Length: 617
Image (tube, rainbow, N blue to C red):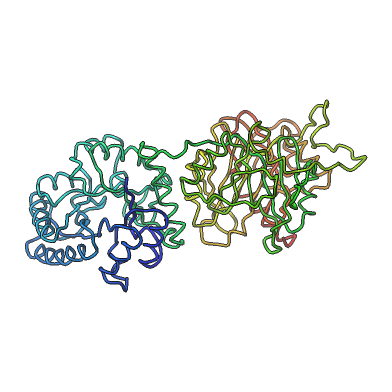
């Protein structure tokens, strides 16, 4: 189906918004009145600009407070409306949005509302324009889609239909029963469909609407269920986004428009209107790549964690470090001194790398060109919204390119003894505390791309988002949201500050699974590693909240180990010092624990701030 976006959904001047919508692949736009009034272009010039960009003007909006009025007030409203109808034609549009009245002068009289809307539609028809009547969720007398439809049906005018707006419908709905009957509206009387998602909040509906709408798939509304009903009614117009959002108003129009269209493509897929390549959810983490100007501090931390440098890239300054199934690449090529050490790329094991890349491209993810030397493995890679490079890998699978073929083994130093925590030699039992695999990665998002990142990882990669969590930092609030496969083989935690701050202030981290965190922490410290110190008050509180075996809590105090418990099991974890923007977490999940230590995050963040103050890092 055709796609459209309201100019109010994007930031910038009207011409910037139109350009962004066109480049993102939208077919049309809704022109918001304030954008028109602020533009130096005439309506004819705006129409020509849209034509040049391949856009249609699908709707002019909004008109309000025009029905169920005293006679004198309606006469003034009708005079104003005639001007708007002429303006709509000059823009090249054929539909005007009319919102249900919030005027204190409006009366609760459906017959009068229908009669006046019929007269309004008659005036619109003289200009070749239609009127789409929409129920505002906070309308004075008409606040539901069913009430608006009854008024339209009673007016019985060919130039009068209804506009269905998902926010106004779903913000008031108490269940599917409140949507029953939408599919019974004649399709040709649904003049327009506006779509917006929103987080499920308990707040005034007007403030909720004006500040917290988001694109489909980024909130908690069942937009797919609503859209199916509208399609069953026979609606054949555009799917149009109308999103009021404080973050979007401050973000660059181009990336926001891409995020918007990706949301519509994903929504269309969910109801069978589009069929990009099927999702190919990743099955594991092949590697995490650190970019650093100085490999020595990173090497020291990895060595103390039990990793061994096992290989080096044939043509690039990239070393492979391994321990158990965990692999870390250390890249000293493109790093700048100012950026420090950062987590720049992730290798994801994919059951179908080519298919996953095709899906990513169909959903507007940037496919990254790669400079390859002759013989290098032809890996597919896409960019996440935060710029992280995502490589789609098939490690050790016959018939598919293997990234490890680009690396040559390095000889370990002669006489090196195996440290506690390192991968065992063949034929020996794993030592307690050895790193087993990467449990999860934590990626800091730019403040304006948090919702986009969650949708990207769900739609493009096939990961399931969990609920957002707010975490108290000593200097503000952090929002965190995990996305994962159903079996937990891939877990990524997306984190962002709650305000537009420098995102480089927040560290990224790599969480490593171990079978015995106490043994792992002791091995790390014995190998020269430094663990994050935890305030004694934290462990005093643990003693009040939980019962522990003899000596257990004392070990947690000694090593700076955090503890948590949920209905599924226990969670023990500790942290290394931070190198650049990256630190490591050692964690032990027992009994199927599904969390990430959110309850401990405020103490951990405070301890990290204190550690940076002491070290100057």
